[in-house]
Length: 65
Image (cartoon, rainbow, N blue to C red; front, side):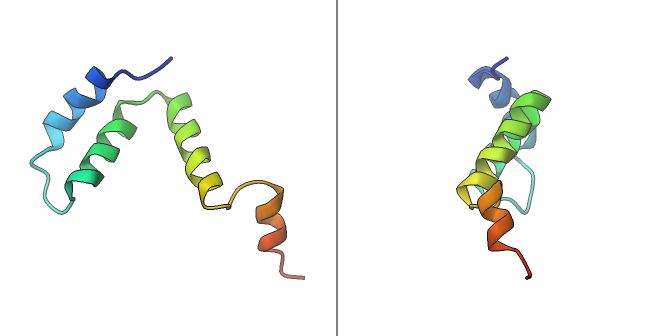
């Protein structure tokens, strides 16, 4: 269930001439587009956890009481 390096390199070759994105954003976009739905969900959750915007701590942080 893991997206291989070969998969997202194929996608990257298709989008490398896209305007408006820098090189880092193109690589991230290619990885996300080549990933399975489960892998995309895991990437999103890891990103939200890195920002501390997921889980009980996030509920406490954004509580308006």
